[in-house]
Image (cartoon, rainbow, N blue to C red):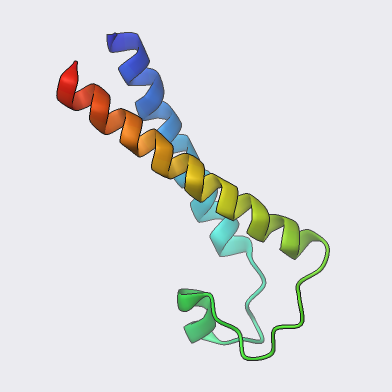
Length: 79
């Protein structure tokens, strides 16, 4: 089980790094620093193309990160 524990830990680190990279690469120049931190936008018209794909990927990675952290906690606690 030590191998599975290590694989989950590496996956958590990788997913968090990818999430950080995508978050920093999102286009929030016109929204200001407040929107960059909170994710809010005053003039939301629906992002198209690459920005929308990045946001969807970021959401999916967030769910994946949550599941991986749950698995990591279970493995650490009970194994």
